[in-house]
Image (spheres, helix red, strand yellow):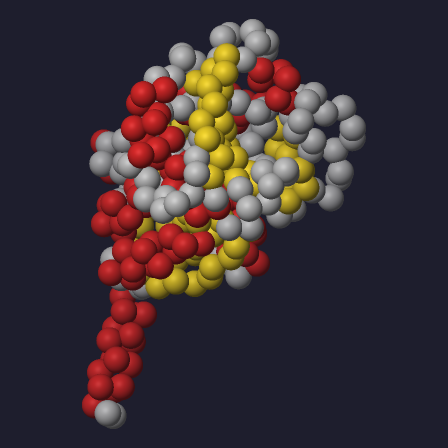
Length: 308
């Protein structure tokens, strides 16, 4: 497979904005500190077709970068099986009680951890990202609090790693959905690889308004590891699909985006339970109030107003 790589250098704040913009133009985007100059960050994107330099330069010109200089490189990559090459760089991960590994790992699986066999792929979610890590820890947190969902949804399932995590932690059937058919196919493949075919049902759907999902709603747990923009836009849909007393785990957002997310979901009458950070990536847990909790909240607010 012939692939093209673009590389951009910028300061940290600008690099984050550029990486978000590039997600509509490239297959995969990554962001990391320049080892040669810690004041700069490198954004790398991989494309199946040669990207237009003119389009990319126009995109970069749209970013408010002040006096920060930007460099753009576009290179054709050698014709290799890049997935196979990439897998060599993925050691097993031990996070949140899980042992996440690919087929290239031959060492014994630790008996004290839950094994998840997930191959590196173009679908998002192989466990090594801070957002996936944060979501798995959030699931373990809910279990430790005695929460046991009966009708969970993994919204934007990617490889299905979080759907599998839910199924393995709580021993329940999970609905998974993604706008990308490659992701839903990968989710079902990974369910088979992890002996969870009977526990995972995957749908290709845009948002929560497809007939398949509306029929299954309300969900008592929704996990959405996507991007901040869609999470804000979908707040009313997600609220409507979440049962009273249900929990919502959100990730895929940077720490500086948390305030906007909180405002959107507090406006949707959800209560923030927990916020955690993995590097610059945040994971949030919300709860939709039960009728009794809503009444108590309004009574407490009324008493507070009267006491002023």
